[in-house]
Amino acid sequence: MAINTDYFKKKLEAEKKLLIKELEKIGRRNPDNLSDWEAIPNEKDTSQADENTVADNIEGYEENVAILKTLEARYQDLKIALDKIKQGAYGLCEVCKKEIDEERLLANPSARTCREHME
Image (cartoon, rainbow, N blue to C red; front, side, top):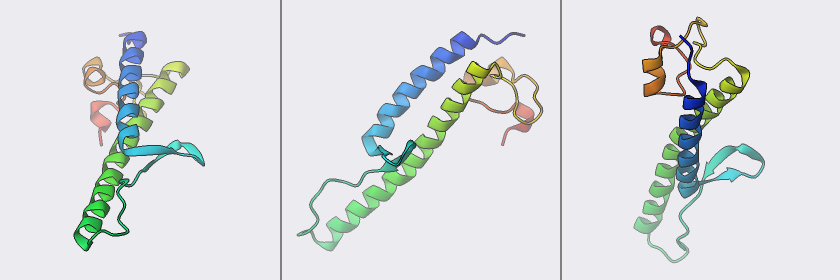
């Protein structure tokens, strides 16, 4: 079975654009490493704030860090999948090198393993 890489490339690129927008809402690219993202703190002035306000700001920042890590992992998976398309290795399991079935790729276009080797 031949995989329609053009179809999956379009899907992956569209998802990548959406993901970048989501990442930019809560983070920014690390100026020292542009492939890395870092959470941005809330812009509220806490110099005169009470302890509860400061705690809320810290909690909000920590939530952004957790969300950012999840989105960044997804972003990296998308980049890997797009690179595999360029290299002609898209749709092959990273463990056994067999083709990943199309149903799995439709559910997750950046899948890196077949069903047998799913994490």
